[in-house]
Image (cartoon, rainbow, N blue to C red; front, side):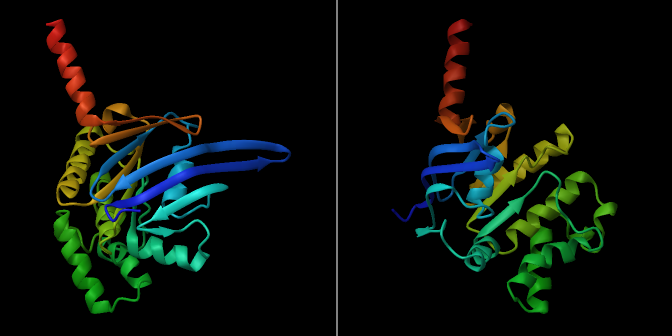
Length: 244
C-alpha cells in the first residue's frame, strides 16, 4: 500500500446474528482514504454509516475483509493494540459531545493525554494550547453546563486533536447545533483540512456533505457512489448556466 493512503478497506463485510437470522450491515465495502482528505460518508438511517464508522475507528471488527490503517492490517489485532491505535492515532468527535460533566473544559481535553501517560505539566500545556486553537482559552475552567452547545463541541474538537491524530472521525458533528453554530464548526473543519488534517465525517445530510471535498454514499450497507464534491458542484453550476 502506498504511503499516501491512510485507510484501505478491502471487501469489508459485517453481519449480525439475531437468532437464526443474519442481518447484513455492510456488504463488500471497498474504500480508500488518502492522507489530508476531507471525506463525507452519507446515507439514510440504516444505511450502515454507524457500523462503518465503528470499524474505521477500531471500535468494532468486521466479519470478513481486510482493514489497513497506516499500512497495518488491524482487523485481527488484540484489544490492547486497538486501544493504542484509538488513543494515539484517531480523534473522535460525536453529535452529543461526550464531555464529562464534572470535569472542566481543560480537564476534558487532557483525558487522551492522561491515557497516553503524558506528564501532568505537559498535559496542561498541550491542552491549553489546543483550547486556544479553538478559541476557548478563556473557558478552560468552565464546566460543560456553563458552555453553549457550540462551545462544548469546540472542547470536543480540542480533545480529539490534542494527541495530534492521523485522522479525525466526526459523527453528525453539527446534529445538536443550530444552523449558525453548525456553520462555525464546519468552518473549523475546513480550516483543519487546509492545514493537512485528514477528516472523515459521517452524516445523513447531503447538503452538509458538500462541505467536504469528497462524498461517499451508502445504501443498504453498500457503497453506491463515490464522487468529488468539487466535480459535483461544477456539474450543478454548468447545468444552471445552461438553463439560464
